[in-house]
Image (tube, rainbow, N blue to C red; front, side, top):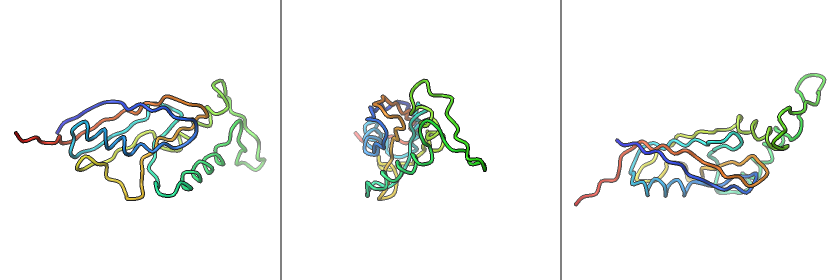
Length: 155
C-alpha cells in the first residue's frame, strides 16, 4: 500500500459545474495506481465538490437554479412570522461572496472515492463536479490524496 499527495488546479469561468471525472481518472493512471481510495478536498471556501448526473445537462441547470433560489444575493427573507429581510454583513469581497460561502457550507468540500483498474467507481450516469459559486473566473486547487496499490510491472 502506498500514499501519494498532490494538487490539481482549475480555472473556472464563473458560477457553474465543471466535470472533472476524466481528469481524475487520468491523474490516477498517470500516478501509476491500480486500486485504492482517492480523497479530494477543495482548498477554497466559495466552491465545492459534488457527484451528480452527467447525462442530461438540464440536471445541472436545475441544480444551479435551485441553489440560487435558496441562497439569494444581497439579502434573504427570514423564516420567522414577520418575514424580515436580512442583509449579509460580509459583502466586502462582492455581492456573490457571502452567498458562495453559504452554498459551500450546504454542499461538500471533500469527497472520498474508491477506484479499481485506475478508474473511479461511480455510476454510469454520474460525474464528479467542481462547483464554482462565485461570479468571476477563479483559480481553484483541489488537494488529492491517493492511498492504494501501484500497478505492478513485470520485467
